[in-house]
Length: 402
Image (cartoon, rainbow, N blue to C red; front, side, top):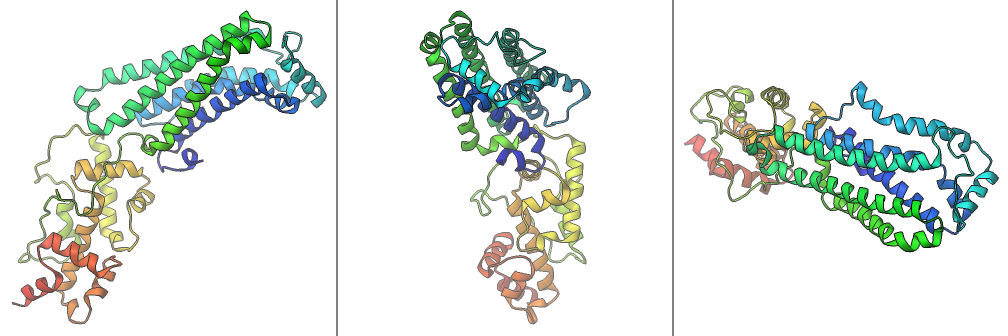
């Protein structure tokens, strides 16, 4: 559920990963039910789910490609990846509507020692033996395709960009993800080979039990990796955590007290990069057009003074602009070289300076001013004000009157 509905802006790509994990886990559960379940009802139920095996490969492919491209869009040719699933699903429809007693008869045969499925026509288009062969071919095809995607991406990326910190976690995760699928592919081959060689179910389970146990550990491990490293779901780039009052806080120039300041727009001009400001050369992950699009959204936020809202967060900018939160975080940290919290504090303190210059402190308490600019705590306001100006609000007011 987390991957399906969380992380605004990357829902589709997360759905590919969620789909892969769900359908691969469903197939693993199907296999273990066929091999070990004592209930014929459960075995009969899972005979209806085998078609979904053909979605495992496409979902893994679209997930890796979408992460590398930062784009989940599917073109017309991409729908061909779902053709095996559609064909098998259509061939399985007559069995879907067969009687439950017939499905119990199939389940009884699966639980037997001979477990010969040739006498049952579960699929009117794809015979059982051909289905097994296609399972192996498909998983090999997609395993190779994932490695090709990673190789092609690395080849087309400059070494500077490919090795910047923002790429490392996702790069390593995609490598691990593909490696795990490759291991599953080899493990699956061993299991299928034993299934073809040994007609006796007991002998098969004896020979393939290690492969089945290993497969279950790998699948569980893959799910756990996603849970322990939630940034995997954010894609590229990865959020860089910074403290609001970090020791290495970069000093921000506050508006010159002698200069006229009739509007917040004039005061906040230095918040965004300008042609007059020398930009640090960085291996940016975004194009200049995309950065311009973000800057337009940020300028609208500044113009509308949304930052004065007490609960104003990065997610608010994401909701207003429609841009992924992790893209905005990367913009603040790498392009502006400023954390979102420091950016918000700077604008709030600049607004407080305007109020103090207008003489609002004569009839408003510091607590009222702090509330007016979005702070829920007067102490937090005083600390932020001193950090930005080098003075407390009271000292600043005295300086204005002297």
